[in-house]
Length: 243
Image (tube, rainbow, N blue to C red; front, side, top):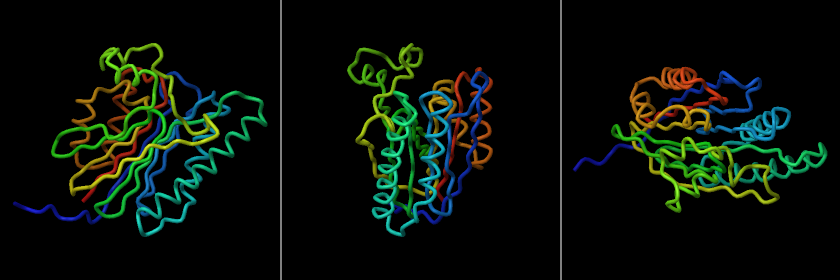
């Protein structure tokens, strides 16, 4: 039996588009290949608030010093996000608005080890040996219905309350981030995306595009696919490939 070799390096690319309907892109993404950090944030609360929060989150993550040990880096990123959550809550109070926030998914990697943190319905997928798996699990009203068996996957895509999330940065005083730790194999390909992509592009199409070689071509193709479907929301994709 062959023992898989360790991951030597990563290649990544990102692309974000306002879509065909919205006036403002409330998505923000981070493609920090050298730091081993990638993220997608999808703003909520109207463009005056949503794009402010998603940009603030990405800028804060970018400023965290990349620790060599993965657990140290994950903790530093968590600490930074807790501070951002507090700042967003304070800013919402100053502006007198009920809601400012964003969903978030991030991937952080060191060699063959990685962690995914998320809140909300921005997603992380992994393509391994030609098979696509969803790594994150949506924090959303519709996902709760699916989990309880009250709704099927196909119905969930069309549900009128599909935009209601149950967790987000800025939504509550305490920030709840889910975490999954991952063993990465050479050849693994990861996709981080806002819901504007996965609500317009089918999983089998994601799987097909992620089978291509170059991350830059993948993100361009994915966003283009969403645009051909009318793209009612902003669309953001970050692709990360392990070698």
